[in-house]
Image (cartoon, rainbow, N blue to C red; front, side, top):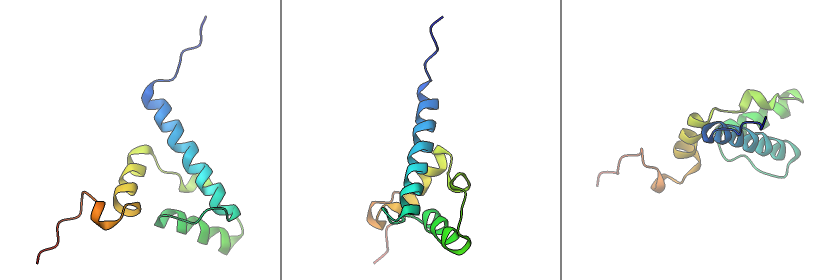
Length: 86
């Protein structure tokens, strides 16, 4: 019997998990710099305690998307920020 392929949503979740894990590994070895508060907290935990479990800093896909909108994008590209009043 042919193995069943992953559904699109399962593949997207697995990809987001693998990408976050890779980023945290790169941050831990010093190859990348943190882009968001969660990654900065991971690095700070690693420096303070000498170890940190990367799985504690991996977000589900919907929260990762929200983090991208609220933290990583520059303020002028965020869709949830109201326009400043002049």
